[in-house]
Length: 78
Image (cartoon, rainbow, N blue to C red; front, side, top):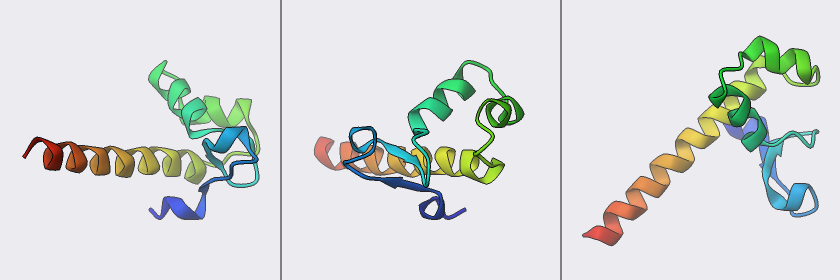
């Protein structure tokens, strides 16, 4: 999954938070729904402009971010 096709950040939109392209729906909001037990279907029902691919991209974006942060923490600890 290439999350870059779905997720971007623009300082003029939500203060630069990563959002689904063409929306003001943040990755943070999507992850919050999922963390609270929401399903992909429920998120799409609430935000019909989203697709399953958009939601998967938000998760993939976060995964990549965490990998980068973990690598940076390991380097600092060394």
